[in-house]
Length: 401
Ligand SMILES: *Cc1c(COP(=O)(O)O)cnc(C)c1O
Image (cartoon, rainbow, N blue to C red; front, side, top):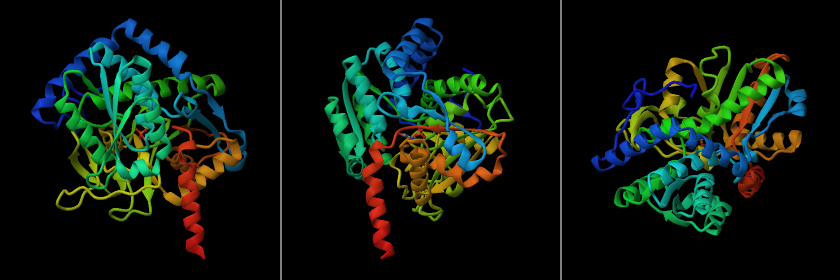
């Protein structure tokens, strides 16, 4: 792997680590042991490559977005993770973790999900490998992502509605952790993003690094040189770290992470952890966290369920402080504009999450010259979001009247 490695206890600089109850220490150590053996085992790599190629449909294309380029100026390429089986980058990580679960002798997969994409990917892998599957999802998220709930249930998974707190991703992670503690023997917890206690941030990054490895080869083939910037949306941070990881050592490549600005940077109205957060510990890891002065976790808001979370992967916190990557945010209305523009310019409906990255490029194209090359990671497709976008637009019209 080309990226920076965390230390033995999973720290990226001061961030990351393992903050869990004693009962979870052994399963985390076991997971790390199995992973460290697997990553060096050519048979594991061969098996993973097989499923990524024949089942997921990799490599995903790097599409030269000609009409978008004509509109905006710099040469824009889109890394098409939306074309993966199940419609997002999540499956890259899930296939890897399901193969690890097989090596661990586990027959039951559990997962948390926000937008539902990770739940769908996990339910898919469970069906593929003949495993049992339970997905925890906040009740609010279930309502805004009904299509994905139906997909998971069709795939044979049980979807458990989580009704605690804000009824979104944070509470779903708590429930998944609780399940894991009680069912350690046969269960693997498939964490969906580059977050949580070590070794998850490292494992998820490594499984998502296929995005960056491919993008690097593809841009060198198309342009004969590295890009000037790579732009990706940041929820927990897995699609972003996956594409960034192959370019971290190339200082000439700007790495730009786009968080959810929601309704603006006021407490409770957004999920821009670097704009409004402070260092703290949440759900097993140390990173930037949206919290009040007493350390209580703040409410978050984003039109996009997949970005709506109070903390962010520890490697991003490290890249932020070191200045190697830049983090910024896009508000709901601009993200929806990004969705519309990509649909009309390129015939591609991006996920609302990915629309944040697209919107950032639309707003900031003037920073680049005509010869500059910008790659946007289109982390997923937007079919799951069309109903929500329609409702959002109806609301806007009503407010104007
Ligand atoms: C889950 C999801 C995200 C956010 O998760 P990351 O771990 O930050 O990548 C972004 N885009 C899509 C399409 C998703 O499903």
